[in-house]
Length: 87
Image (cartoon, rainbow, N blue to C red; front, side, top):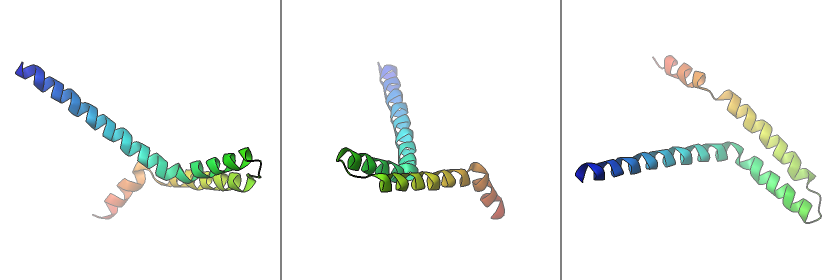
């Protein structure tokens, strides 16, 4: 019975680690694309209300371009390059 209890605890620990990794990834994606989502939602809300949402749509496109540039600039090469410079 003691071994079975340990295996259940191990499974729960693995589950918690996976959930934590998914949460961290979701936070990172939201930080990168959060403005895009907010601008697109605002554009849809204005269009549904019968108003012009083209300004919000343009803001979403601009934010998407900035997010893509940030994603392209950050890579493992940039992190390893910085670590090599510190030596």
